[in-house]
Amino acid sequence: AKHVDLGVGSGSGNGDDGEQSSASAGHPRGLSAMRNLNSPKFKQADEYAEEKTLVEDYLLDNIDGLQTIAEHSDQSTQQFVTKQAESIAEFIDELVRCVKPGLTKAMFEKKLKIAIAAQLERRSLTKQEPRKTEAEMFIRVKSFLPWLRPASFSTFSTTNEKHIYPCFLELINFVAELVVRPLKDQKPASLDEQPKRLVRSYELTDVKPDNSESGRRVDLALKCDAIYNETGGNSEYDEDSFQISEACLKANNEWSDKRPNYPRIFAIVEVKPNSSYANMEKGFAQLVKYTHEIYWNQCNRHFIWGLVSGGSEVKACVFGPNFLLASQFMDVTSTAGRLELIRFLVNWSFCEPSKLGYDPAIRFNWKYWCFTIDMVNSNGPMPAQTTYYLREIVVIAERVFGRHTRCFVVGEQPPSLDENSDNSGDILIKDAWPEVSGSAEDDMRDESKLLERVSNGLAGRSEFNGLYPKFLGGGRMQIQNAHGDSVDETTRTVLGET
Image (tube, rainbow, N blue to C red; front, side, top):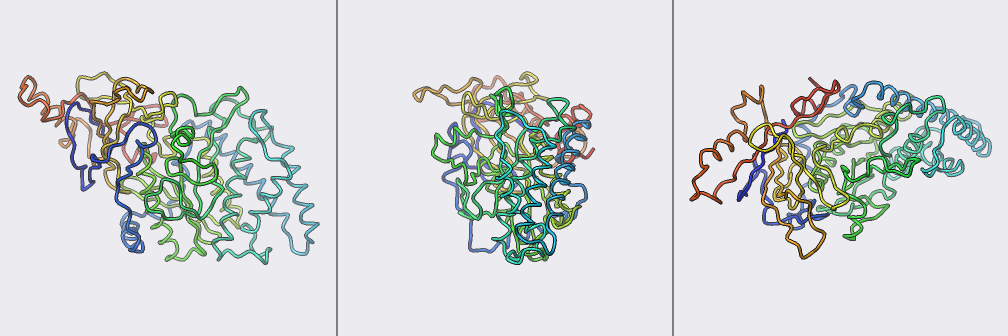
């Protein structure tokens, strides 16, 4: 279960279950609050042996219906989202049918252009969001069709990873383009039925992402782009966002529109030449490495999505504190396989940020360029909910699996943008995922209750001031389930289980 404790005063040291403290590094407000610049470099000499062991220990493979984790919590909204995914898949099926034996290049391109124009005529356009022209979409479609019909393109090989990179990239971006082009007879009936973001691939492939500690190259990386609506507003990039702002990264000279950037990467795609056991095992092991870096750079990630492609077969996977789940193979050369992959992409475009793996209680505030943390209290004297402003990260989640212990130094007031102001904090929040059993009332290992006993027992003993953290509040975090009920935030509820 997700467990948060809050205290005042001194109190540093090691995280639980072997997670080491990074207290000596210090994380100032802004971009640096997400990274430990003095952290040890990852070992590269050992070829994924440790990661393969973790995959063997944690992987539950061939999970049916894994995309339901990313479904919108509102049932009627999700029904609309499912129709959107199906209409996009039908569009792509029609394009695939343009690839037929015996057609000359000119005849093939003519059929393809006619099919694209006919489909776009059936779809709505909005005024604010820029759209690709038919000519631009034609180029994009030609880029990914060889992957969907490899037997018809003699120069394309699914056993060559570099051939797959542009195909996967363009297919993902093509789906994103259609997410904001619904069929005219399926226009959104409410704001909930409008996409919240566009899940796109960064343009550069097989590159080292910015802010990488290991220097390892990734095949493809996905990002969540904002959608600008017709009123000039912004889908989820308002005063509070689940991602650090591009402006903040640019101010720190650590931003590129094309190159992946770990503070903003949503998911990583690993490409292999075929779907053999050895290739898929290595693909998952590599994602363990990359997931480590995402946790390191993003202080508000609960779990992380990923994709592994073995030739024309793709698996989606999700990493959490105590699980690694992988879907069944989705064969992009088949109608059914393409639909399943498109469902993932479309679900990610509409679902709540928590379904993407982001902590809804930790958000980036664009006005103050810092993260805010909502403390929902079930124990202690503090109010039921209080918002704090992040000053420093003194313990960061350093493992892919485990308690994911994080410790934040926070303040009760927004930070001043004046460099000469004192923006130090005197409150410490510990955020972790300990193993629990039973209800919170019966949990003998509840750390917040133990801290409360210590704090109450030493109250009034001034000689001990500064030697222990004074407990203010904490307990198990709660989230709303699909029925609107508040439930303990555990990995079971995160996965949609009861």
